[in-house]
Length: 287
Image (cartoon, rainbow, N blue to C red; front, top):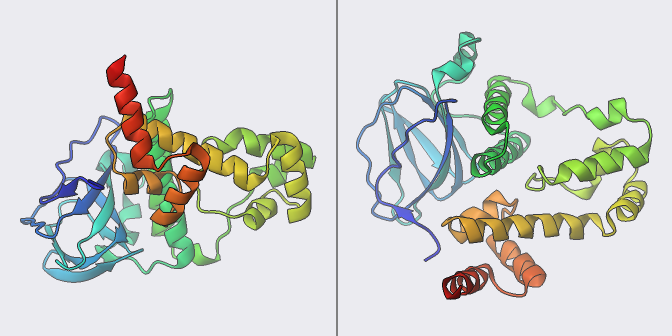
């Protein structure tokens, strides 16, 4: 079974720090009664089509859409039964933005006009939130709060399409070798980002040719091979330590296309992900 399909909404109990990420793959017979929460919900539509009814207003939803359900707004999600929704939701308590209450004035209920750049940034933030929520590392709650605030600010601003992230490495590190070394050290915490070789080289302020040369010298492998290894190792951790579905793991490790994830996993680990999980489970049972 690929997914834990939902026939009703996920029950959410926010942790003390006020942020929780949920995944919900809707079954064809998914049904939802009207709900009203005391926290904000930001939904990213991974696939499928449907309707969000928020305070009686109809908002269409399809792949790549970002929808806002403000706190204390009555809402219902209705799926197209031929193409049920698969959603990721970020639930955020008011305490998170209490220092800037006016921020929510720029996040009206409904579907946001999301450019490709904005959608890519939301996917990146979502993956990092999932990563930190999964890991029990020191500082996890603080980082999750920071990521949630960053996401709220990004969505609230109207000029996201024109904005480009400043590169700390480009500003503070003049030596390219040091820039690449720092990037490699940080890559274990950002391997899930939606990026490419040209973007990374530009982020570090160097040509593609120079970056690929320095990366191979420092890492002992090409950028693509090294990145794939990090993604597959994390996929194995999720297969081993969680009950997450294969598509959910593919998304969390940075893959938009499930078939690409399957090919990369089998090439790297020698087995498809499902078979790898079953083999690990069987070995563990024999111990």
